[in-house]
Amino acid sequence: MLIHLSSWPEIDARLKTTKTVVVPIGSNEQHGPTGLLGTDWMCPEIIAHAAEKADESLVVAPTFNIGMAQHHLAFAGTISLRPSTFMAAITDWVSSLSRHGFERIYFLNGHGGNVATIEATFAEIYAEWSFVEEQPPFVLKLKNWWDLPGVNSLCTRIFPTGHGMHATPSEIAVTQAAYPDHIKTATYSPQIAPTGPIRDALDYRARFPDGRIGSDPAQASPAHGRTIIDASVLALLKDVADFSNEVLPEV
Image (cartoon, rainbow, N blue to C red; front, side):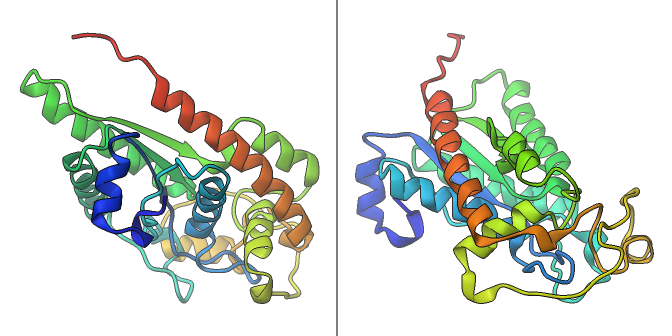
């Protein structure tokens, strides 16, 4: 069930059978000369929506598509939130979903730059309950889609060289499989981009002029993307089921 394509009575009824919701979360930022700006939110959305088609009992929230991308702001089209804004927005999403009865809130992330702030937000949320000596009515989980069991090793086998850290062939392949009419091509040099630290936007643009980090995205293809999506869907459904069935200690 996709929340944004459902009515409120339908969600109300579904809450009688499941208390788990998946939130795709990512970023809208440059992905090199061939990657779509939405890549980091599109990948978790593509995987979550495919998982919902495979198992209609899965509840998927609307995609949280703007994240922590300040270091990409020197590239046109990038949109970023400040850490404090991002944390406040995640907190409000959790509060809203929890208010309606969702008790297991699973964030499927598509942007490595979000991780530290999402984890800090979870810590802030849990701290509010700890200080008043109450157990929160929900449990939170963060999972990067590429860290789903078996997915990273699959991507490494498909792309043994030039996978890199940003504008990777695996993430671009996922978007190509889902949006074949929007495949981009470009010439770039060097074939495999350099690597280095990530700091502010101007430093990033100077180090990585075309936006890539360590990657050769020309290796991407829709066929590779479909293979990665299929593996990710199976891994996601199992991971969400394990999260839903986790037995919490009595307090």
